[in-house]
Image (cartoon, rainbow, N blue to C red; front, side):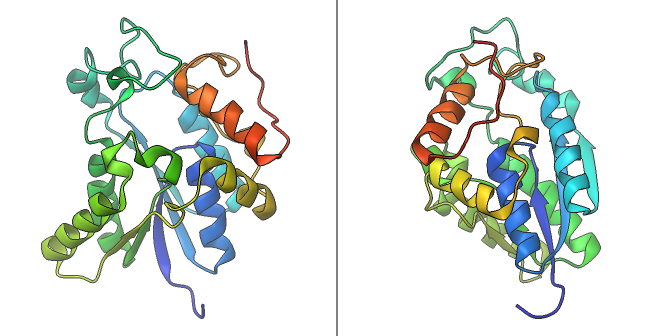
Length: 218
């Protein structure tokens, strides 16, 4: 591509969104990163997002929506330690409509900085379980964004057709510091190794053939 078109990246601090950010930078985009505090237990996500943005040398804003814990507490184990954390998929690990909330803010930010493209890290391994990671969702949201702003806003998950293992391989090729990304739903000194996200991370690294630099407690 030519020029320096601006894009907004929803950067969680995990390997998927970090790879999207590195890819966008490699494509010549003027990347602007957004990270959200939404009352999650794993505050290390935010620390890792800061590291990734610093490595990329891109503008980075952290949006504090911690009061959403009032809504998510009692619903999801990502925000409520009283809810049992599972090692496999369960309804209790879903944060209701989370990506829609994040993308709404991203649309407002994109308009404010003159960007027309928003990217986030939804990938194929998540589609089966998470409705807000599916193409029909984000394309419907794109239409709503266009109607609500009268601008040609584009919302994309550029690797929605890739499995997580494939995305890790791409991340390694792009030089993503995967050791600086965070997947665990808990906030320990190391990844717990037991929650659903840790299990997925470990399995994806194993399937990808990429060296796993993650320190797991178990």
